[in-house]
Image (cartoon, rainbow, N blue to C red; front, side):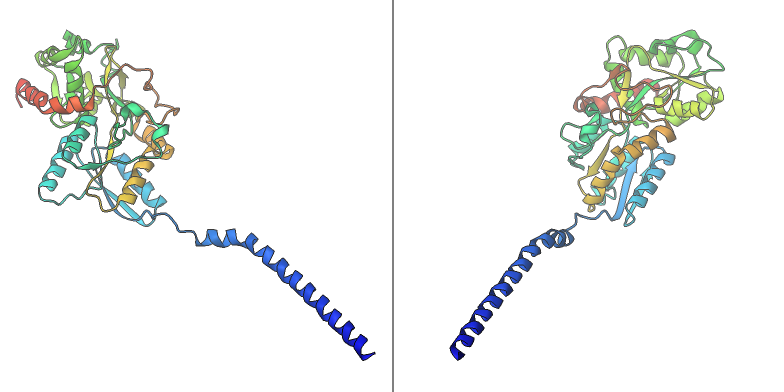
Length: 354
């Protein structure tokens, strides 16, 4: 009897242990389901966008100040600021800083690709493969990705609609009697878009240096930048001007008596490139700023605030503007333009007495 009780007691213990092991095994099977959540919580974050960021630019104050404000709002730990002047003065500043190893800029954003080839040749830029590349017009992007166009601009003819009844259609309309001592243009020794226009038009078939001789003989007025051209034409000081489309269209949108024409022979095209300096100590923020500039948000801002045509494909252009596909663009190899740039500017200076 005692032996039977002992056997029954042993059987009971064995059964209880088996049940206990089965239960523990069930708990172990539930653990992996919780692992992904724990792993995600412990996953390392990417580099944060923070710190000071300095942009050297020729962009309009109203625009670049708003871009910096929006960038700082998006990245509260960052502090983007800018220095603004004409393209030539921006380049002179950074070249002077290079000589003393005191470059302050993290990014450069000026008007034309030839200027960026100069910066590349002086080892002042570094390449960056932006994730926005597939969304933009690649004809305005450096093949080696040292710089990216931001807003495709074109030089053309602006005129005062109160003073001109028949719209010009050709560059050569500015050589006619009605345009004599009645036309204003930006100085290629100051303005990057004007310098690019000089290089493109003097190389274009049927235009050449003879065209600039014609402007000189027709007593063209020369002011520093596009803004000065717009002010002169809007006020009626001159009936015609040569200017960037975005400046002219922005003036017209603000109520000035202005209209803009893309001459039939073709338009010198630039895109306000942006590039990261080779000396930046805030690469993460600099790369984020390039992507931000190419984003739909900032492309929309440029279009609505200052009449810029977006670099992003598929976006609407400002009223009165032509898309990249609709206009005849004069775009030469930037390396070639860089090689001839200084010589052509010197020739212009001699021709016009600067």
